[in-house]
Amino acid sequence: DELLKLKPLYTQVSGQGEGDNTSLLGQYVFPATIIFTMVVFLFEFYLDLRQRRSYKVTKFPSELAKTVGSIDADTGKAGSSAAPSGDESKSKSKKKGGEIDTHKPLLPQLETKFTKAQGYGLDKVNFSLVSQIYGTFEAVAFLLLGFFPYCWDKSASWAESTFGWTETGDEIKVALVFLGLTTIIGTITGLPFEIYSTFQIERKHGFNKQTAGLFITDKVKSLVLTAVIGGPFIALLLKIIQWGGEHFYLYVWAFTFFFSVFMMTIVPVVIMPMFNKYEPLKDGSLKTRIYELANKLKYPLTKLFVMDGSKRSSHSNAFMFGFGKNKRIVLFDTLLEQVHDDEILAILGHELGHWKLGHTLSNFAITQIYMGAAFYCFSRCYASHDLYRAFGFDGEERPIPTIIALLL
Image 1 (cartoon, rainbow, N blue to C red):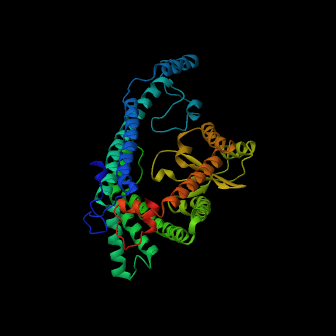
Image 2: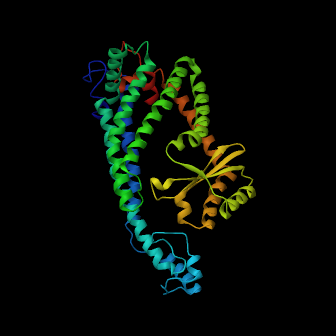
Image 3: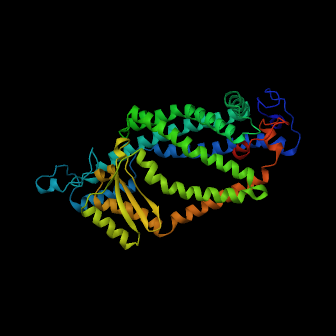
C-alpha cells in the first residue's frame, strides 16, 4: 500500500504533489515504472559483476598456453628471445609499442598482453558499475522529484515571458525549449563520467590521444548538430502526431523510417567529416587486395578511405557504409599501423560477411518493426490522462504536452 502511494514531489496542480489519481492505471503505473527501472538495473549490475570476476583472473588460460607453447616449439621459437637481424628485421611485423613480435616466442608476449587486457577490462567494468549506480539513482530521483513536470512548467513560463509563446498555441516551440533545457542538464550531469573515462581510464592504458581542446570542440559540435538536426526532426514528429488523427502512428512510423535512411546517408559523408579527416587509401597491394575481396563477394565497393582516428585514440577499427551500388569502406589509420595486411583483410572479411549474409539489412528491418510496434503502443496510451497525471502532469485545465506523452 505504501508503494502505491508513491507520486512525484512536484506536480502541476500546486507544485507540491497534491494531485489526485484514483484510477487503476494512475495508481500502479508510477510505482511500476520505478520497480521496472530497478529490476533492469539489478539485472545489468549482476551481469557486470559476473564480468568483473572474469577480469580479475590473472592466470593465463592453461589450454591456450598449451596450444601457443606447441606453436612456439614447432616453429623453433620456444625459449628464444634473440632480436631478428638482417633481412628478418625488414620483414618484422608492422605492430608497434610492445605489440607482437613474430620473431620471438609468442607465449610470453601473449601473457603480457593478457595481463594488460585484464587490467583494462577491470577498470572499464568498475567504471560501468559506478555509472550504472549513478544513472539509476538519477533516473529514480528525477521521477520522485517530478523533474519532467517541473522542467516543463519552467520551460513554458520562460518561453511565454521571453517570446510570448504559450503551451496551448505554441506547444511545439515550448517543447523545443523543454528539450533544450533537459539536454543541457543531461550533458552537465554526464560530463564528469565522460571526462573520467576519456582522460583517466583511456589515458592510463595508453589509448587516449584526445586533448582537452578537442574534447570541448567535439562536445560543442555535437550539441550544435543536435539542435540543428534534432530540433526540426522533433518539431516535424510532433506536428505529425497532432495532425495524423487516429492512425497517426502509421505516419510517424513512415517519417522515422525515411529519416533513418536520410541520416544513414548523410552521417558518413557530411557529419563525420566534421570530426575526422578522410583521405583515399594510397594505391598499393592492400588496396588491390581489398578490391579483389569485395569483387569476390560482389560487394559494390566504390571508394576506400583512411580516417585519422589516431587524433583521439589508439584503438583501431574499420567500417562500411553506403546504399545500393555505392558502397564505401573506411579504415582507421591506427589499424594500418598496428596490423598486417592479411589481418586487415580478415577484419574486413568479417564485416563483409555480415553484409553478404544480410545481417545489416535484417537488423535495420527488425529495428523498423520495433519502432512501428512502439509507436502503435504509444497511440493506445496517447489519450490516457491518468498516465500523465501519475507522473505529475495533473493540471486539469492544461493540455498534455505531446512531447511528454512521447517520452513517457
